[in-house]
Picture 1 (cartoon, helix red, strand yellow):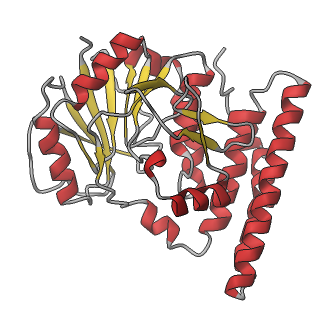
Picture 2 (cartoon, rainbow, N blue to C red):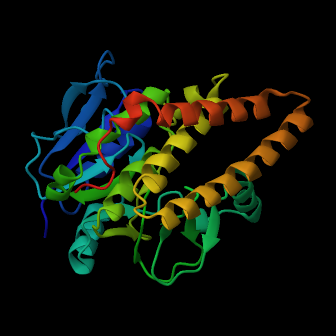
Picture 3 (cartoon, rainbow, N blue to C red):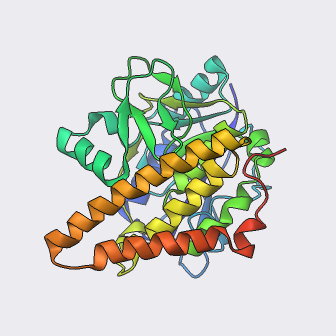
Length: 323
């Protein structure tokens, strides 16, 4: 079985949820070689120790605290965790065995259970970002030309191939991690909050020809501390910033890597349909709230997003598909 080490990013503010996570790590049936906690500079270490976790202070940022060089880890596999995930005693073992059995280069877990959402939540997801169910026999999550994802509505096996995975808990072979230059994606932190970070990182695995899997029965539970996203969603400009990120993510993940005129044209048409639909959604929201703020922020986000992807900073980022 592969050896593994755990890499946790945190601000150190998740409290009891982080303690539960560390306790669940200590109870794993297959022990990690290391438990590394990458805490943002300027934040104090939590006042408790559960196991043999080691703390390293790094630059603050959801991307910055994840896309490190990991020279301090020599295991076969890195198990990435946020600071609010509780593992079942055999979670790591299940994921490692699945990687070996299915020849996955990386594996995520179905931690948000999209297919288990109530009908109202599915309708909301479909309307707010065109996130839809699918009935593939092969794929867990698909990334589409418009930049949105779809989820398998009725999984019948524990493991499926996938084009993306959620960020709170996932594994990747270290040799593959080292090849993919995730540090090229640090630009997303510059937008204030890295909306869409999970897709940006995990789709890069698939887009570069590696095998990404999803485990539907890993026993991982999201305790949902929301220590970073809460402040973002409470800001006055969150919708504008989210829209800028939506444009930039589509451009980086879908449009730029397209190698033919036809592929680029299809991606562009698909994205135009999406942003037109969302314009109608936010226009209706503005009418319902008797405020132009939602639709104005959305339009400004589209304009600023296009300006951003044309900027010298963005155009200098190396290719998403590694040659």
